[in-house]
Amino acid sequence: MFAENTDYEILTPDGWKDFRGITLTENKITSTVILDNDTLISATDNHYFFLDGQKIQLKDIVVGSKMDTVDGKATVLSIERNEEECVYDIVEVPGAIPVTTPVALTVATPVLTLLQTPPIVPSVKLVVVVGQTVNVPVIVPAFGVALTVTTAVAAAMPQLLVTV
Image 1: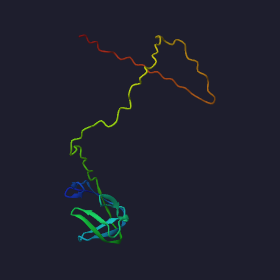
Image 2: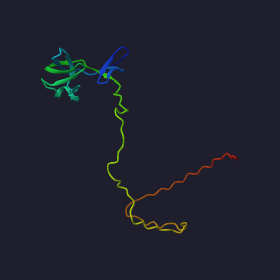
Image 3: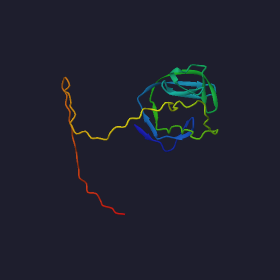
Image 4: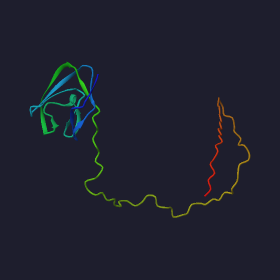
């Protein structure tokens, strides 16, 4: 089941963002995380949280971990396992917008000498007389079974004559 979102935003590392909607998934076991700032979070084991800037799944978080929150760091006081319950997934949250302008001006500076320096001795120059092959090349049959198919397609298309 899908429900379109028109009223709510979700808090992301880049601030509040619109999202398309939510879908009802199957019932799953969740856990409730209690933080020292009186926050309660209920999520599945594979839900991601940020700890010291690193994305960590709930199943890998332990009591005493420092979780990144909108108000700074918060310590995990307890993690309580819940019964199986109805779970919703948020659909189509826009990704982070990459920063394309560096803060400081970037200037290229030479560090190493070029590795593509030309050789000191000139290469051998060979001139071949212009010609055209008239004879059909000899093709030696290979052992086993082989098949060669040659197809030519030609089409005549009238061209518009333009004079300048």
